[in-house]
Image 1 (cartoon, rainbow, N blue to C red):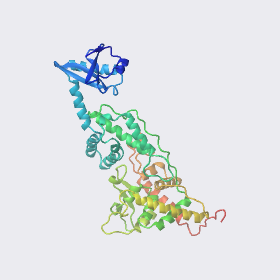
Image 2 (image 1 turned 135 degrees about the horizontal axis):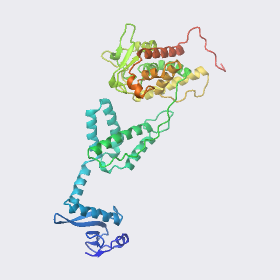
Image 3 (image 1 turned 30 degrees about the vertical axis):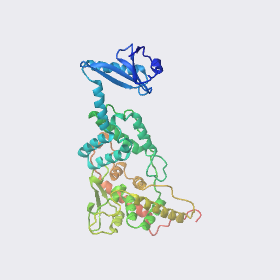
Image 4 (image 1 turned 90 degrees about the horizontal axis):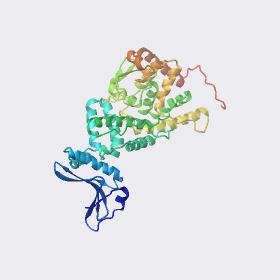
Length: 430
């Protein structure tokens, strides 16, 4: 076999043999060379001995390792390993087999099994949803060690740019969900590195997407009146359900999953609703005092024999039925607002059901309710009392929360049932 001064230019100019294959050895590093087949394929090779036996290693094709200096260094590393008794070719084969079996899906399955054992069921379900919905469809069958920073960036940016369920009045993506996914990926790859399933964390240096603009939509007093009138026409279950979203300031899934067994029953009707920890977002039981108006809404609901759910058919979380009911609600509200204002143009800005929670909170603030009390009503873990103060201040402000929700309920009742001796001023143009 010929020996030449193996430079980059020389390697590129070498011609293929008419038949078979030929190896041109490097004059600079004995045992290193380039192999050329009759078809013109070129590969870097290294020849050395392991425990006295000759071994020919293919470093890689010129297309895969284009620089001769990189290929020469790889050959030099293999020779150094062989000198200590290691077998570089055998190590490569073992690594290839491990990469083939160590797919992203296999690693995620192991990780989620540990999550199921160590996390609260609700948290484990949410983490599983993120991986099964967003990660595995893209990376499932790929070797975990092949996932690079560029793959993470692509996945996070795609998630941030798109929104599967369009939000009325918003054309943006899902930056918040993308940020949550990135957090879970960081935790996962940290676990994978600790368990020798990955060599490095590809999420290192990846920034969270910019947060979505904070929503500020509130229902005005006129819109609250129109909302109440419109919910009357929706009927069961969505009419009273939507009313309770406004009156209790709780989350959609919590109100939709209300159960009769969660009420502290009194002769005059339910007075206290306790959301169990497994249904609350922060996994802690939450007490909600019911204003007379909220108790009235609940008291008018039908009781289905053998059914604990107040709103049968809505399930534990909002589904497509909410979207259709919300559209009907908007149409009715718009008609009510037009009738009240005497206008033919659109008079209802886009809003979401979650805006009812913000409307209630703002309404309580307008009534003089302290922010830390409103935080307790909303069951916010990170509220106005934070840090060391939050550690030592475990007071639940139950009396203040009761007063806050009763004041808010009376305020809503004042809007929808004005006192008989109060005459509303006619609007301009009436």
